Amino acid sequence: MAETLLKVDGLQAWYGESHILHGVGFEIGRGELVTLLGRNGAGKTTTLKAVMGIVERRTGSVKLGGRETIRDASNAIARQGIAYCPEERGIFSSLNVEENMLLPPQVKAGGMSLDEIYQLFPNLKERRRSQGTKLSGGEQQMLAIGRILRTGADMLLLDEPTEGLAPVIVQRIGEVIRTLKSRGFTILLVEQNFRFAATVADRHYVMEDGRVVDMIAAGDVQANVGKLQAYLGV
Image (cartoon, rainbow, N blue to C red; front, side, top):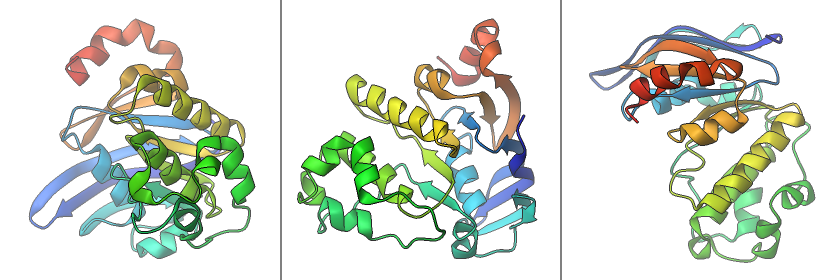
């Protein structure tokens, strides 16, 4: 594995009295694309939020580039070059595409320009004056990803980017994710669609009941299909 960029160890997280994560541990090398797989309720989204510091309480260790962040506020974590794209996308309906794109602050130098983002997502260029409410689900997802590329973050946390999208849009999202990886981005991807995840990832971590219970490399997926189906209930 490449130089470790993100190392999570013994991560626990709570929402109020609900104890969701129970000692999650994994690591990601710089430039890797890694997925978190698991059934609904396994703790995948909470893991992304806990890495970003946007849960009510967390303990354990989350090191980014070797620096401990467990006591940092979420805005301080973001400034270290990590960005989160939530499943609900968070598009501002009263703003048009370009206004949505310009909204997030730059946290580090080196963010993509609007022209570069429009090259990745030609649909957004065509719709740049359209209100957020008038975008299709696929266009909203493209906008949600495009928006975080302006920030200068070099690590991306993507939560269910293909959820509810037509197959042709899923294919396009996959192409963009592979392009981002080829440009040196490190990506942690939460996915329910294992067939899609298998086309883009270097490794897969499997979660159950708020814990990481297995790790399967891309090259070992075929030999472990039965095990994965049992984990995922498919």
